[in-house]
Amino acid sequence: MPRISESTVRRLSHYYRVLEEVAAEGKRMISSRRLAEREGITSAQVRKDLSYFGSFGRRGLGYSVPHLREEIGAILGLDRRWRVAVVGAGNIGSALLAYGGFARQGFDVVAVFDQDARRIGQRAGELEVLDIGRLAETAAEMSIEVGVIATPARSAQAVADALVAAGVRGILNFAPRKLFVPDDVALRSVDMTMEFESLSFALTQARAPRRRRTPRDTA
Amino acid sequence: MPRISESTVRRLSHYYRVLEEVAAEGKRMISSRRLAEREGITSAQVRKDLSYFGSFGRRGLGYSVPHLREEIGAILGLDRRWRVAVVGAGNIGSALLAYGGFARQGFDVVAVFDQDARRIGQRAGELEVLDIGRLAETAAEMSIEVGVIATPARSAQAVADALVAAGVRGILNFAPRKLFVPDDVALRSVDMTMEFESLSFALTQARAPRRRRTPRDTA
DNA sequence: TGTTGTGAAGGCGTTCACAGCC
DNA sequence: GGCTGTGAACGCCTTCACAACA
Image (tube, rainbow over all chains, first blue to last red; front, side):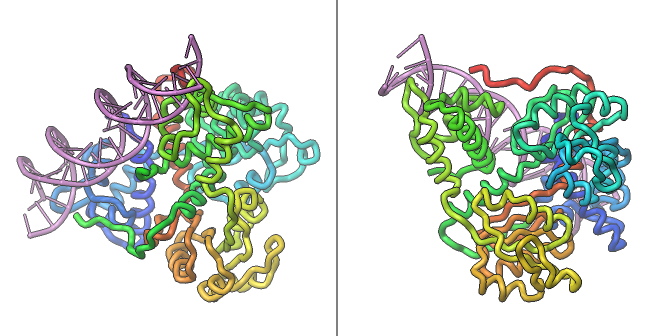
């Protein structure tokens, strides 16, 4: 199996989502073309992405919806759960806890840490906010596997280091700063500042209005 | 000027951030090498990115920190403000309003819409939640330029269509769904579901622990 | 005829390497 | 000597196009 690119993984998420919708509609089979058009990409891309992991389709017929859904679920590791600690119980941390999307994706938040003495000991959802000073030991004790960083940028790298020391295997970073971690620790970042600035750039550069729709798969 | 890639824009955000830090430290000049190492990329990449927009450096000396900061700020359009409407006053919408990062990036939230009759008329931050049914007319009246979609996935495309009809020039989408908009409307998406699944994939695939650090710029 | 799976071609972004300037 | 700006080389991802199969 070749190295899988980040964009392929992101598209697998899309396919999975489409397959869930299509399964709910009761459809049994789907072609790469239909799978592609809902996401604005080409059918060849879909087939290429899937081919990295196996031959899931049948020529002339397409892909079995329930079968492909199960295969992609397994590839993405959605068939298992992870023990998560959220670090930072401020705006972003609290929103993430209230959000609830974690559980649906297999991530169980079992601990919340904060630095602020006034916040420690308080409730955050169903959990008690713990002292960030004891992150490394506590996280190890609690067998935390994934850390979510929702602290200010300036403390993000230190928190990441503590999480790594505590033995986490993955980190999801919401602080607007590039983090360095050992390469056996999975790292994903959601940088809202960057999205805002990217939108600002696009708005600023925008010229020559055309009012044409994004092209879809025509193959 | 060639077409600017999304990754170049994202790096410009990084450079801007580093320049703010370095300016705070009082440094006057910075080399592409130093600018690069804080972000884990190569110095050649920095110079190439900047060269798309002009020649901001001086051979043998590097870049003037305040000057480059101003140039990149202008490129990213951070020197102007945008009138924003947030659509969806649930978990994500409320978190975004409380977050406060908007204002810092030049985005002023001047309206909030929701579909839920119980939510309409209530306060969300300093604003009154308006009826989403009147989105198109109200947004046009209020000269909304940017829409933030924080609704469930199923209504996201309809909201996007309404925002476009109301004349917005940009959309920031937090709903986990691919949106189609005319190509003179700027669109950026933050898809947390996808980040979770991407992390899940990386965790699942992880093999052969090596405990080696991410390589930095060695040029 | 319809659709997959895939080698080959193409396009785009990154890295190299060096001329040019301080 | 130090550092930028950039054409050329490289490598990766996407798209093409078609053989294989239902």
